[in-house]
Structures are given as structure tokens and as C-alpha cells.
Length: 290
Image 1 (cartoon, rainbow, N blue to C red):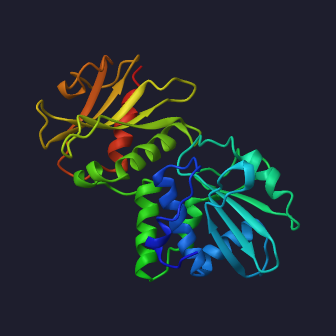
Image 2 (spheres, rainbow, N blue to C red; image 1 turned 135 degrees about the vertical axis):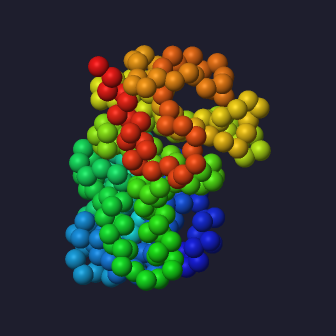
Image 3 (cartoon, rainbow, N blue to C red; image 1 turned 180 degrees about the vertical axis):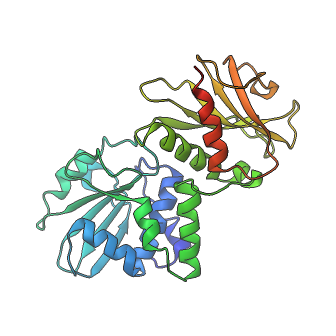
């Protein structure tokens, strides 16, 4: 496998069910492991039980016979292998995992199975968890410029823990990450949500944000940015919509949502400052109308 990060980014195999964003996250992790990052390597070794063995080979998207394409396969000098499933959202498709297990369990050395994702419990046996928070902590004090960029990427684009200026919200994954993180904090780590956006037109959107469900409910809520005008302009409002239940501080449905017939809307006004976790938490509180 090439040492160069950008060469690695183009080295994907056909047949993977991963999204391009998940591929990017997988390659970033593989890059640091290939280069022998001490703390990330120790994190995985501890979870996998490899002891003090040196990592000998890092394979991105290896094909495991008829089971399909896995995310990451590590091989240690003593022969032990570690299969890593990379997830960047809750409720990821795990239908391929039993097939991977069946192939890996035929290897001479007993393998380890890890899921790098957003949850610490509820994983199917024998898969063990590593969280993105763990990965963030592993690179926390690394002064290397690439490690600093990786830390910033995990913090904002995966964990959704930073503020998001409007230009980044319209051009990166960060608004989606912010929305997903807010829903998890509000409704629990098992919350259901998906990214929802209109098609962009010359870099402008009618709306973009997160459709989500509250505990025990359906996907009847949406929050995010809605364009202020029709024809589309440069200004956006931060808004929350509900399909079935009234909200606190109700507002008129914005024109830019077109024929989207959800009856209940509320908003924080025009976005003139970065969108923050507190902004989303304030919107989510408006679902608690008596």
C-alpha cells in the first residue's frame, strides 16, 4: 500500500457498500496506521488484544472472497489479523458482517473484529467497539500538521462538535455532522436521522439539514438551513419543522420549501453568525410544546 495519502484516496475496490465520506475516513485512519502513529496503533492493539506485536500490513478495502469488500484489515508480525468496520453514522448497514466473520474465522490465527463508530454498546458479537472520540483523544497532542488536520476533521466533520460558518455549512459535511450530533445528544445515541437537502443550484440550496425521529417516533422532524428568498439568494434561516406536532414559537412555512406540506415551523432567524451546537439544542427544545 502506498504511503502517500492522496494515492491511497484513489485505491478503492469495486463492490464496497461504503459511501465516499466513509471511504475518506477509512483512508485517513489507514494513513496514520501505515505511518506507525503510536497512540492510534496502541488504541487498536488494546481493543484487539494484539499485545506488543508490531503492525506489519495495513490493507484498505480488501476483498474477502465471496463475502465482499471489507473496510480495513490489519496484519501483525505474529500473524494475528484485525478486521475493522468503519462507521460514521448510527444504524449503518451491518448485513455483510456475518460473511466477513465466516471468512476470517477460517484463518490460522484467531482474528479480532472491531467497529470504529459512534457507539460503545449494542454491537453484534463478536465485534468490539472503538469510538471516534477514542481516535480523537489518540491524536490530541500530536504536533504533526497532518495529525492536527485529522483531529479537526474528526471533531467537526464526524463528531459535529464545533461551530459551522455558513460557507462551510453550504460546502462541507459539517452542518450534517452538527445536526446528527445534536439529535444524538437530545434523543440518545440510538436516534434515527438522515441528511436531507434539496439539489444545489450553482452552489445554492433551497434547504439542507437533518431529518430525524424523537424517541419511539417516526422521522417527522427536520432542522437546518432554509434559503430566505425565491429566486434563491445568499441568505439563510436556521429552522425546525414538524410533520405532526405543534412547536414552540411557530413561524410561517418558508417559500423556499416549495410543496413540502409539513404544517409546523419555527426558526432562529437569519444566519449571521456560525451555527453552533447550542443553536441546534435551542431549536430541539421547541419540540417540547405541552
